[in-house]
Length: 159
Image 1 (cartoon, one colour):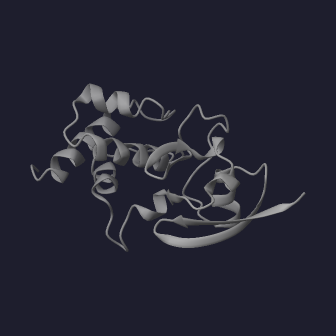
Image 2 (cartoon, rainbow, N blue to C red; image 1 turned 45 degrees about the horizontal axis):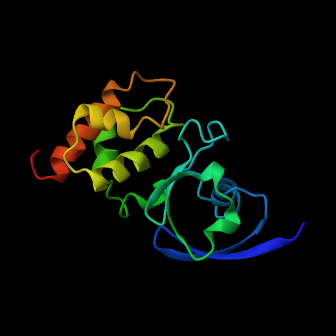
């Protein structure tokens, strides 16, 4: 199989990699770039565990081919914290114990950040709708929703 040379920006850094035409962006992130925070849950785009931002749009990286990343900007969970300083969403997930096994957590955090960038003052229903593409088998979602709402308040300077 022919390998394709791809240049992209990942978490603000210019990267180059080689990939087969059938490799997914998820496989490239994990296997070529060694960014293992993005998880594979289903491999069919149904669970949201592999969610990343691609040119500012939330996507399931298992449904995007690696070659499609050419010239594009990708944001993964590894780019959410700044150095050792956790993003407010990450802190609130810890404070609210909004995670358990951790498979879905990176995708939910990316989806929650995308939601709060679009809608800084969401209602509970809007949070639930915004995270509807992310499935979690361990929690009842209540703590996740509470963490996102708390993060939104802090990001708006209200808490």
